[in-house]
Image 1 (cartoon, helix red, strand yellow):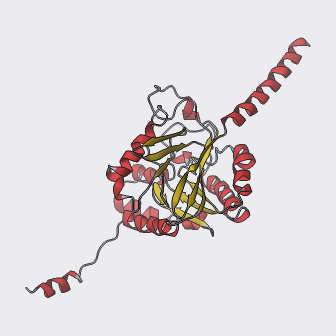
Image 2 (cartoon, helix red, strand yellow; image 1 turned 135 degrees about the vertical axis):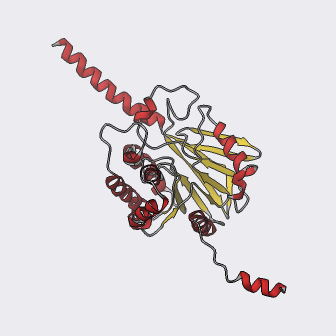
Image 3 (cartoon, helix red, strand yellow; image 1 turned 90 degrees about the horizontal axis):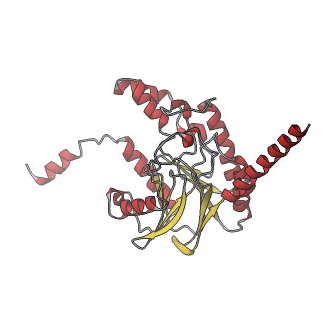
Length: 310
C-alpha cells in the first residue's frame, strides 16, 4: 500500500474526545486570553459558600478590589462551593442544600462581575467535584452514571454570566502565575509551595504548563505563606470561610488542614504577562477576625458579670 493510501485511510478514523480533552481545550482558551495580561490579579482562596465569612469579604476584601483604580482580575481558585450534602465526611448540623449554595454564589459572582465590573476566573476542585464522586459511588454502572449526568444542568446553566470564565480543571495559568488547587496538604507552612513548584517544574505538572511561570499561588491548604524555591515564588493564599466542623476533629498535627487557619487573600501586579515581584502582596485578615471575636467575648463576659452581681 502506498504512503498516500495509508494517509487517506487514516482520515476515515474518528477520535472520541474525552472529558479531559474538552476541559484542557477550554482551559487553554481562557489562558490564551490572559497570556499578556496587564493589571492586578486577586486570588481569593477557598470561599466555601455557604460558610463564607461575608463580613470579612464585604467589609475588607471587596472594598480593596473596588478601590483599585487599575485593571483587576479576580480568581476563585476552587472550593467556591462546599456541597456538604454530597460529602462522606462530617457534615454541618444543618446541611445546606446545593440549590441554596449556588444561589448565594451567584449573588457573590454578580457583585464581582456586575457591581465591581471585574473579570472573574473560577476553577473547579475537590468540593465542586463532590457531586460527581457521589454519583460514581452510589450509582453503579458507567452508562447509568452518564445518563444521570446528562440530565443535570451544566455549570454554565447554573452560574453563567458575562465576565465570568469557568475553568473545569484544578489549575489555570494567568500570565506567568499558576493558580492551583492541588489536594496534598501539610501542617508545615510553606512546604506545599515547594511541592507545587517542583510538581509544575519537574514533575507531571510540567505538561499542564503552556508558558514560562515564575509564581505558583496555591489554594486548598487554608494557610498563608510566601517563599522561594528554584527561583520561583510560592504562595499559599489562605481561606475566606468561617471555621468548619472538621477543623476541630481530633487529628494528628501532621495531617492536612486541622488547627488554626489563615484568613486572607493574595494580590499580584502583572505587566505584559510578567509578575512584578515587588508587588506580590499576601493580605492577612486574622487580626480583624481576632478583634471581632474579642469584642464579642468581652460583651458576653461583661453581661455575665452584671448578671452574677444581681
